[in-house]
Image 1 (cartoon, helix red, strand yellow):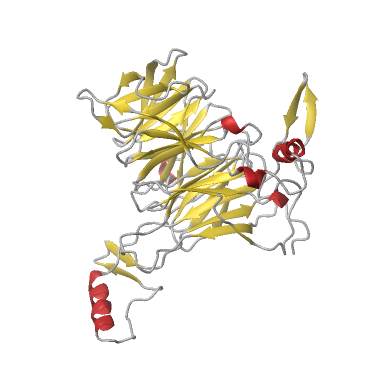
Image 2 (cartoon, one colour; image 1 turned 60 degrees about the horizontal axis):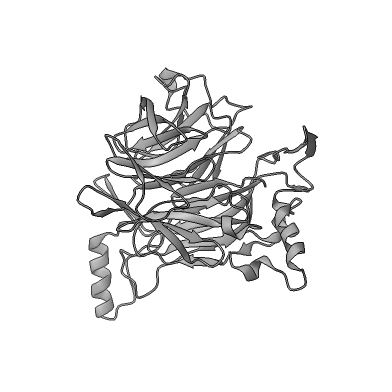
Length: 447
């Protein structure tokens, strides 16, 4: 977020800071109450209208002179902890930061609201494949020092970026036994934001946030750390060998293994703790199952939920801050929602019927793969991202090239083509690379 976007033309800086804090003090939906000298905010009700209202969208397309291998599909989106902006990773186009329209900070929305077209406030052109990214957990727009995020990408160290101007603040470099710099596969902060945990192929490295460079503590692991989820002093590490390992983190940055969880058929790509810290949800590549675990007894999953995942790409899911809803995307473009009041997705495993779709709601929102899901931390807003790598039929592509050389405008390849060869490889140019914000709360005067 640039500083100019933080200040209106007539409002002084102190007044603007109060405006920014409205995202934490919403007047209409959450209810404030004093409890032991503190303030308790009630999270708004979700999916009460059983419909979603599109608020804003942004899309990416390949330039006319770019090669077919260059496809700008989304690879993840995450709301900032204070809810003022959304961070998005776009393949071959770096990282984009998008701000929330100010009229969405408070109140409700009308069904005839004009859909906003989002422009990127910050664009960081990363030079390689971004493996992972995360926000600083105590990020607050009124404290510029806290506005930053981490990325780890191909052939680069862990880097910290400023969320106001997109500048590089510092980097954290991990070196192997022969003094070669290694890129981290995954990265996250600890709960209080004082340490950075980076996952590599054979080690976990812990960096002090206040000491950039190559100073780190190291803990050896047996398999690559593909993703993280942390809750206070508990760290869950997913791996490409289909397992999830639980660690207890000490204040000194050391790790004690608690145990491993087995159950996925593919490499684990995403993990998420429930707000109470007692349950863990995991998803993997080319695996149609979401596994729900109780960390107090992790020998077998509590529940198995189904979604469509037909790719190695990471398909995100999210748990609402109230802990009542689990939302996931899929390669079919359908959003699935499990409501704890309608179906207990945290327990009641039925081994004989694990393939049954018991989701509470299904929303076919995208015509392409929906790989990104993120629930706003305060407002009833859902961010979704779509897109995936599309293979082009080499036969039809060659025919189109010959027709172009001969001046024939009747091309055989079109945007609606969707062919399958031997039922295995699917060729399609029907792509949708977009970031969309949806209203998932109450919609007044909805007919």
